[in-house]
Amino acid sequence: MRIPFLAPRQPSQVTSIQTGGFVEPLENRTLLSGGGSAAAQAKRDAAYLQQESIGNLSEVNLANLALTHSTNTEVLALANQLIADHNAAETDLQTIATARSISLDTSDRKHDKLLAKFSNLTGKKFDVAFSKLEVQDHKKSIKRNTTEANRTSDTDIQTYASSQVPTLQQHLALAQTALSSSKAESATGSGNNGGGGDDSGGGGGNGTA
Image (cartoon, rainbow, N blue to C red):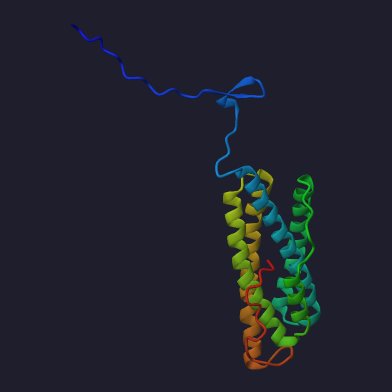
């Protein structure tokens, strides 16, 4: 007696799903991995926009403070550049946020305390602390914007983040020059007064940029 050959049964492939009483092809349906990744991405983008906005406004406030607390040429050049560029960046950022119905805070407790701290510094102590803060924070800001430009799928945010990197790199170079200049003045006792030949009052990387 010949036993008929039975081909192995192939596993069935789901090519459609039924939703609301009708069949929908899978190729027309977006499947999100990681438990709603689109919502998670939107949340990360909103957090980035908020951090950038507070950073922009904090930079402008600190730079305006520098204009009245310093006479160091390099520090003043840095401050003026920060005011111009971060005001422009904030204008672009607000446009992006408004289009996505995101309301951005203007400051937070950490940056309010930072501004109050720098308001009590003068002369060479202010110059060193301010320049040191700008070096530290712009390194962090360059990294943050580079990461966001590579991570987000929102083209407007990606364009904003990537366009900020060369500007922030310019700020970093100016801050490094200002720090070298202010340290030299502090060491020799020349230039503006305000005491102290140390690096006291340094920003500690508070993320203003």
